[in-house]
Length: 383
Image 1 (spheres, rainbow, N blue to C red):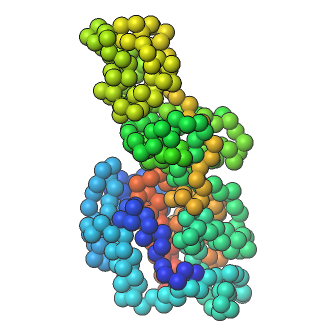
Image 2 (image 1 turned 180 degrees about the vertical axis):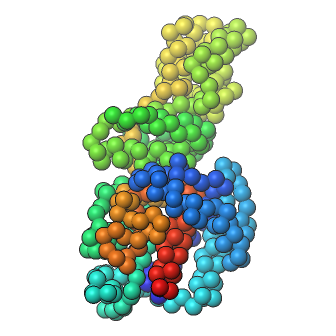
Image 3 (image 1 turned 135 degrees about the vertical axis):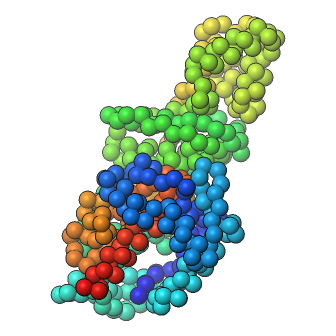
């Protein structure tokens, strides 16, 4: 039996990937995740790897195709195809799916569990799986209620923060660039930790910044703030280049085009609006390339490579695509997803302290952890 508090299942699948559902990624490893033990994450992922995920979806009538950065989407380009395929498979297997039955309590009673729903229903079960998600996109039903259920059954809790969330920036620069997308590198510098360097597309917005590289950076900023550690986010607008390579290029441009303005020169490698913004930030709006001094040139390069982003917050759980934190991973047996605190209890997916980067990785964690739990429960029921 499957109990779901929503009247319709699959809300988070339906809105994911721009309503196309990024089912998984061509290459997934423990290095794509943060949170709990990498060894545990690796064990779970290897038990049900990407190849088996692709095969499973093919078997239920959902063929996948690969797009940029290894992202795998349904050939229909519709997330509804994924939900409908899963529901067909549940029906074929005779799963008793009950929607609109929000679980409000789970207690251990002798050798069985008693599950209580908000409508007053009570169900008895030998095994219970908590697949309630985290706190991200609460309108989809994942509002963090599963943490209380896990705590009542003896589990701990790693404080949660949004992950994969757009960032809110101070100042006005971002609003002037709203709508501009570009490749970038972000360096998240947290007190007492090694720098985290992330590459990907950045989208300037009226509230700050979004895009894959920003979403990936958000969890690191939030975790640092939660732990009350100093954190800086540095923007590199020329990923793949060095201070020396850019300086050599600017010197050559000054020789070839002495009357050109720096913004015109930079527009060869950056969107024009971004180039103008960088020149303003360096205070060089009225200087030609011929009159650009060594110190001014180097000041401009610093703006290109290490501009601090004045992050004040993110857009929170309402816009976050994942949750960082949750039930500690060391309280789970990686071979079965069984609780080490409560016999017969299993936990899978986002309720656990595991969060992946953007690109289908969090869905792969959900598929892999669910398969491991399902196999273990089936084996236990046969014994």
